Amino acid sequence: MMCCCNSNPIAGGGLLGMRQGTRTVSDYSIDFRTRALQSQWNAAAQTDAYLLGLNDYIKDELVSHDLPSSLDKLIELATRLDRCIQARRQEKRHRIPERLPVPRPRPPVDVNHFPAPHDGGPEPMQVGRTRLSPEEREHRRQRNLCLYCGKPSHYIIRCPVKGARSSVERGVLMSLFSTPSPIKRPHFQARLLLKRGTHTLTTLIDSGSDICLLDENLAQQLEIKSVPLPASVPDNALDGRLLGTITHRTVPVHLVLAGRHHETVQFHILKTPQHPVILGFPWLHRHNPHIDWSMGSFISWSPYCHQICLKQAIPALLRSDTSGPPSDLQGLPEEYHDLQEVFSKTRATSLPPHRSYDCSIDLLPGTSPPRIYSLSGPEREVMEKYVNESLAAGLIRPSSSPAGAGFFFVEKKDKTLRPCIDYRGLNNITVKNRYPLPLISSAFELLQDAVIFTKLDLRNAYHLVRIREADEWKTALTVLLDTTSIWLCHSVSPTLPQFSRPWLMMFSVTC
Image (cartoon, rainbow, N blue to C red):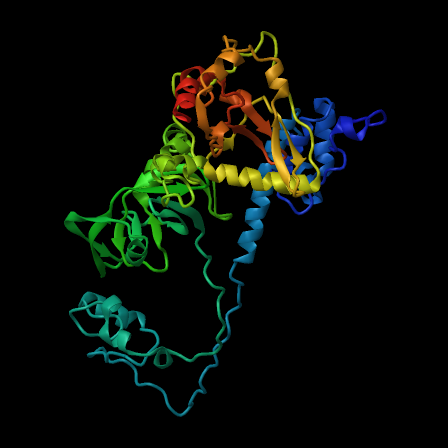
């Protein structure tokens, strides 16, 4: 049993007051784990607080199970039960209601008229009869006659007489009711990264399609180049009908799914206006994703994707696609036009590749990066916007790093909030990169004959230096949404010895 007599809200991180509410168990668990990192409670107390916050329907299901001893296993069990319950509820919503058979009225019997007994001679085709007698059925089977019209050369499944008769002729319509509409196929959000910009759309995943398709009109609208196929590909329906002929396919196109799954696809071009992008069976076979079809979301990706597609989320790959239109150079002296990339907003959102002088973060022995602190409501909204924009730009990524720098805000002059990451704790335990600096007097001597001085403010300057790949986990920032590893450099010192002198000389004009 959990005892909270000596606990306080700060030490508990607000765990005792947390409730699942209208959220799924998965969302509730993520929020609980995040706040649990801030608390000083032990594992048993956290487990009791987690159970207390669950909705009653989950608690009722947990009664019939042996409760796990650890919080992680309890969260796993509760999440699995919640998914089963949600899937069962959705199944009930789409179930077709059962209807009892309606008794058919029998025609009045004419007692004065009885059919003549069968004399064993040729039997009429009995087109008007609803059922054949056993003798007539056997008679037609032996002679390979149609069981419906009694004629040779075809069977009942292809009987022309049966197909020509209307449903009104075949029976009496007693009642009419509409069945629920079929379950809608889930569509997944996707982005096409093109030279002219990013295009957002929905894609259909169809295991019955042998190829990946792109709508012809959309390809023309986005000016996606195409190349002819060596041989045309027929597009057939399930019954063999020819729906069209495919003669072209696109050049490799950059496709992004689920925010950070990057790949290059060549689509076959066909008119499919209802589904502009269709990913077929070859795509499923290659990536083998785990999909929650009831919720229409990706749960996990295959090992292949973790090695290839998810690593490609690094924005270095996007540089060729984020060039964007030329910067507006009006008002900029002609002498600086060759530096137009410096003023590009789109290129400023990408990171450079890893290089020999990437910034390293070597920690002092026996130390570890610090943890986090909480945010207010307005700060949380700004934080969510910052995280979403940075994720879309590829500057940060989700992470399970045990480190986590604090995330807070400083108010600007215009009352808006500036996001800040508190790396002071990390700096205190980092081995300093010391090297000799030039004397200030020596630096001024280089400028003594200059008459024109220019200062350029680089866009996202701290993004222009990469953190060493093995040290990226140390730069993680932790927010209430998740733990996110941010690829920002908190020190530009590794590049200064190599670049400071050439740039200084370039921008000092002497006469």
